[in-house]
Image 1: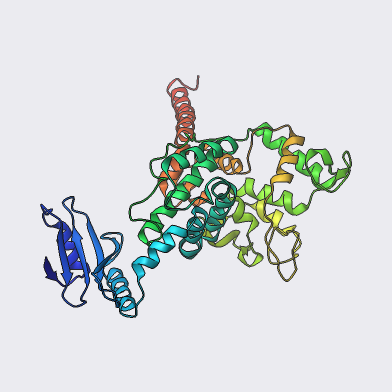
Image 2: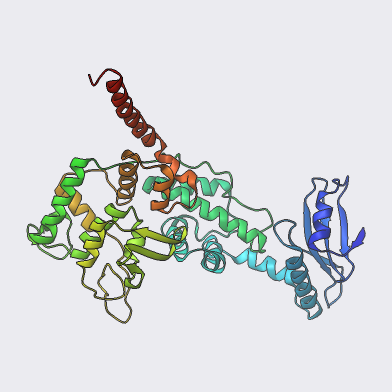
Length: 414
């Protein structure tokens, strides 16, 4: 046993020192009962040691691993544990009782509301709540968090996969993150994570680009949809007799055109407020996109589309609640997009593929990948590398054109 002042610096130095040949305890020289121990694997764990007010032997409460918990955080946690013990509160027993009663649903919900909602984007928290409700809760939600096994998780993943392969993977990753967080905060035993090591479904990168003919067909279908109208059986609406023509909202078609013309993400257009539109400079100024603050550049065609829209509320793409006290942005474009694709005879194209089409068109016109990355708002240049093979094709066409002109010049124009 050794006595040191436990600080970030002293713990870092201790971690870099030789691994002990037996578990070694270090007590803080300021806060009695606060300490850490290192095992023969080099792992360090903070703890609080105290004697219950009712008497009896000392109890030791693990606070968290060195590296996961900061020294000052561990000190504060130890101070609370020791103070509560002096008041007759047994935090170790309370924590054990909580672990015994917490279900998987409650653990994941705690993780989302107490961590994700505070540190991540609202859209991320929303996605996690959906995964919890749709995948985790129905299959694992009622199981005690401390009783869940890897076999339970693997079976649940297999059932999730029958509905959605990719979402099944996302649900397991959420579960794993929740257990990692829960382990660090005492909701489950330290190091427990039954979702770790689960074999996930293979995910293939999907790239679908619209051809020139498909873009023309979609353009014609949108004109028909917003003027003459499309048949109800094309998926335009749920509230009209089949066969009847329904004129599509100009805001829906405008949103689709803007996605095609700018390469923006769906929510960047649907969540866009009029206050973020700068037509004088031809840009959209997004305060908080997927990659943070972002500027979307508008071609003349996009500026003309926006100028043609009537302001009905705070959001440029007006939804059903436009102009009301509790206005919300439009939720999605699934039905209008499906109707337009059906009318155009275009299959297997997602809304997100319009972003791929924008990028592939730019690369095909011999624009450099850095330029495309800027237009798409990629924070990491490596993300744009998915279009590198298209850049190679563009470079080949360019060298063929240049070489042809030089060869003709050398041959006297022949």
